[in-house]
Length: 167
Image 1 (cartoon, rainbow, N blue to C red):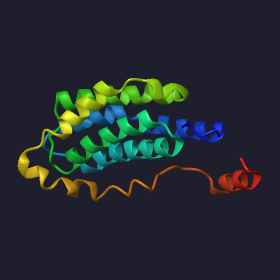
Image 2 (cartoon, rainbow, N blue to C red; image 1 turned 180 degrees about the vertical axis):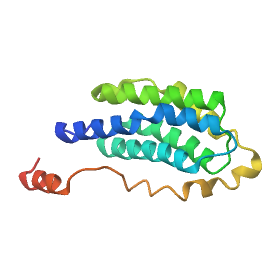
Image 3 (cartoon, rainbow, N blue to C red; image 1 turned 45 degrees about the horizontal axis):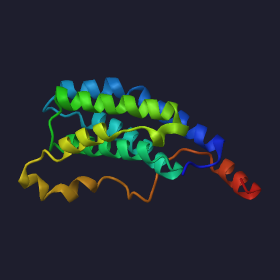
């Protein structure tokens, strides 16, 4: 269910567009690093996906939330050194970010878009780790804040005013 407050929704859309602005170049730069992972760069893209996911969850934008979560999983594995970025992984991340951009640009219809091929592709990457790494899988989630806490930049005074007005 999409939140009824159009102003808050538009703030989310604008913030998400900002997060996506540099993601293409950043993903390509991550691939160029290969085994020599630039953790700061990977974390930048990871945080962008995490922020998009958190806001989407708050707003009831389930497809955006799911796709950004799957991207976040792959980026976390790259950051943790469990996955080396290559052309295939990069292409899937780029395609997923393009679909995220499309859904954010048409946010009211985002839950109607079929994202299964991108989710499946990202899941395939996430599941490609060796059995010895599977036992370590819970560790990859440690740096991620609890999924019940979302990152979303809004002015608290605006929220308080809307709450007092009943909007």
